[in-house]
Length: 392
Image (cartoon, rainbow, N blue to C red; front, top):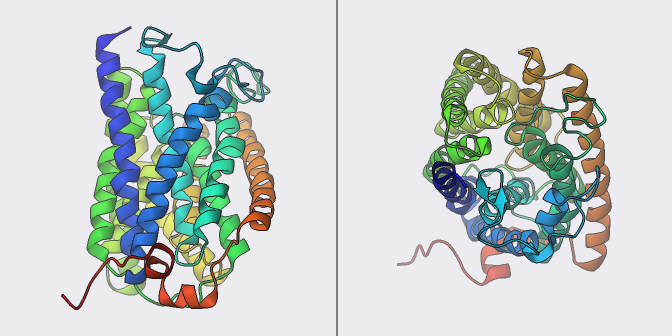
């Protein structure tokens, strides 16, 4: 065990959990109507709790067990055979489990943004749990667990390069979000602006800070590689924020707060897969393009295709993660066949399994709330609480 590595990954684990709770919850919560903000908080919080338990029961074993090229098996269920002395590289394996658990939490939580204001709470829990076990965990094994897309797999000695989750996290969550948005249909009322841009900014700022653990921690060591990953992450986020705001100003005459912080998330998602393989100049290029590319993806999906991916999960996370994964090949840090082939394989697998899960879970618990509940808001009707008491 290396003490410095262990100390850094303990911090990184806390930072990645901080991304979901409270970062993502506040970011998404501020974007919806006031009558739905608590439902968004509830979705993020309950998903964090459920994924933690499921990752302990079977998710970690499926992702990082010794199984075969396709899945890790069930040999590490309930952390079987792992104690405080068991090592994974230079880290206690129980810490590696905890660090990866925070990734298993935030990935299904990202999907929340696609279905807010109209989805059934029971569906959220059942779908998210099954999706993490049947989509996220196997894909994690394929790429990070020594499976078929990693070095020595189907693409030969040099497998796919995905440092912190461009494919594993952002492509899978983005595609699942798009499919759920199509399955649900549009909200009945979708012209209301974000009820609290201030909460959106606070949540985005927390995500930015937490992303240092997300990308820097993925080095799994306290060394120069972690420092570089952290640095390029920050530069990409900052550059994408500026280009998003500039593009918004050029197109609409005003640069908005919600716009600039959405640009931040686009830059962070885009640098995620490449953060261990590129330097500061490449990070500036990735961020500069991401701020414009993801904004145009929002326009395409929302205004041209009329898909109500409510908080633009696919346009920002999906497109950003796919773009960053391709840029690894552009900058000669990975092979074109592995990068594009892995995007295609994971994309098809994610889409097929997600569609099946939506259909099956919908047979057990309703996908969408009724019209009255949606009109009145999910907070009071579903959870018996409201975020704001305007009478006091």
